[in-house]
Image (cartoon, rainbow, N blue to C red; front, side, top):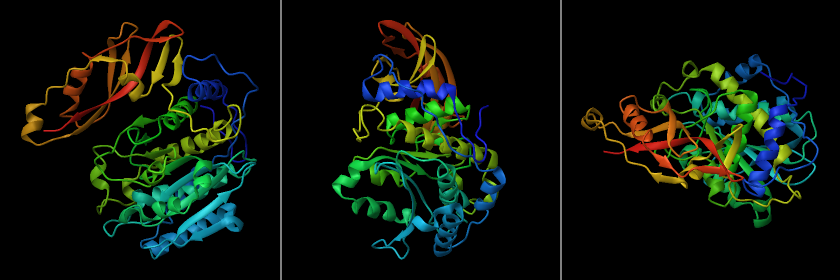
Length: 405
């Protein structure tokens, strides 16, 4: 596994090759010829696990104290000269904002809410996200950046995305156009890293998939449409590309807003892996966003092919694979699940052969009572063969099978 040192740089050979593929797909489509040009160095620093753990353990119980603790962490990370508190209407507490300047004024926003509900200690939801913001700033600050990074601790997310809605509403039309991406961290460390793909920008998700493959860090899709909302929605509502990174699964969902949300619920190894993945991802976005033709935020359409996987095989987003679907018989609802009123989503990864038939299936997440029916149904699905430059290739993708009684 290739990993950066504390103040070192990371050159990921695989990542560099895939970065060109991602640039091709987002700007010209999956069947365009490869981009040319010099390789790009992906540079960032990794904090030591003990640093991450110490900052996580500085969780405070009470929103005013959490705001003060977050500001202190930003200052200790070197952001004291560029930290601001944005007063927010309808909130007694501000958004805490730390800015890392770049060579241009195009922005990548990295956000996490710091407020907590009254039940539980709010370690996972969402001190796990907020306390990473200063460390991510520190991971990027030691090398010159092409883009301006804005790290924001949002207030009152739990009261209806109050802080993030206010922040976006105060941006001018020109400022909104300059926001190339919003990456939201919410509820980390309950399991290996997940993304909310159904409500996320597919090109941003594709880029994260590339980084996960190159760093050999885990990444999966778990959509949380029925759980609630999160701060990325405020940005997406204004046409800004956004993606939420989380760790929720069907099994860990009851921890939210409960007395179980405390330090013992968090799995530190998974949490540290999420930090490493996000740090590499932000450096990758800095190197790649706006790099095709000019540094203007073109907001190209979401790519179809997320990543070349291996010769004769590509990875597609769920939406891209769905566009090639021919026959998808629905699953049989398990009688036991119906009686017990068990419902929800089952996420299945699958390999589609060059003939359009499903060759392999694997459970990603889902209730054990529902999973066998989902897997059985998906094995019988059929797709139009996917071609690259006229040649059929195998397709790796994930699908979400919904069960509603």
